[in-house]
Length: 319
Image 1 (cartoon, rainbow, N blue to C red):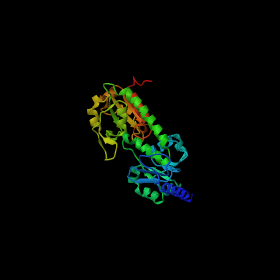
Image 2 (cartoon, rainbow, N blue to C red):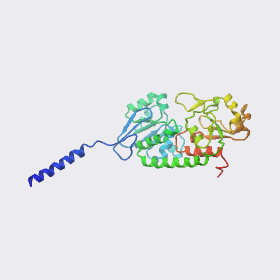
Image 3 (cartoon, one colour):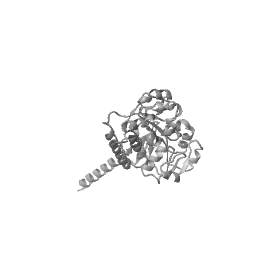
Image 4 (cartoon, rainbow, N blue to C red):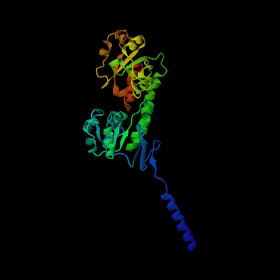
C-alpha cells in the first residue's frame, strides 16, 4: 500500500514540475490571442514587448488615430496629434505636438505612444526623452498597400483588438474586391494622371497607396515612370512639361486636396496655362479627392477606391 502511495505522489510531483516549466507564451508578429506577453517589431526594427494591451494611448499620427478609433479604442485614447481631425471624437481628446516639450506627453503617463518613422528622424530628442521616461514608443508606417494588413494587426496586438481587426480587414478587402470585379474587365481602361501637389506638378510613385487605389478602381496610372522625390517618399517628381506632353492621353485628371495641395479645384486646374490642351480638361473630367481617402493608410481607403471608380466609370457606378 505504501508503495502505491509513493508512486502516486511521485507522478503528481512530476506533473507539477512539467507544468511549471512550460515557457511563457507571447503575442509575436504571427500570433494573437490572450497570452501574457505582447511582442511585435516596429517599422524602425525595434522589438517592442508589452505585458498587457495598452490602456493609455497617445497617437501622434493621424492614420494611427483614425485606425484606433475604428478598432473601438475611444476610451483608451488619451491624446492625439494637434492636426488630427478625424473622426469627430478627436476634438474631445487632448492634443499634442511632437515638436514641443516632451514633458507635456510624459506628464500624461501614457503606456503607449504611437509615432511614424518621420517623427523619429525629425525630432529624435523628443522620442529619446519619452523612452528615457520609460514610455513605450512604437513607430509604424505602411509604405504600400500590401503592408496595410500587417500594420493594422500590429496596432491590434498592441491594444488587444486582434479579433476585431481580423473581421474589419476581411470586410475591407471584400468591399474593395467588389469594386475591382466591376472594373477589371473593362476595355479600354481610362488613363489617369494623379496630382499630389500643384508645386512642380508632382504625382505619386508606382507602388504608393494612391497608385494601388487607381489600379483597384480600374484605371491606368499614366505616370508610372515618375521617380520618388526621396528614397522613402511616395511623392514623385513629374512636372508640367511632361503632363502637357501626355495631355492627349489623359482621360481623367485627379488631384488630391488637403494639407499638401490645399488650393486644388477642377476650375483652378483647368485654367492653368496650357492645360486646355489636356483631353481630361477638354472633356470636363477633372476631379479632386480628399487626400486622406487615398494617401492615408486607413479603412477609409475603400471609400477612396469607390470614389475614383465613380470618376473613371460614372455609367457603371451612377447609383
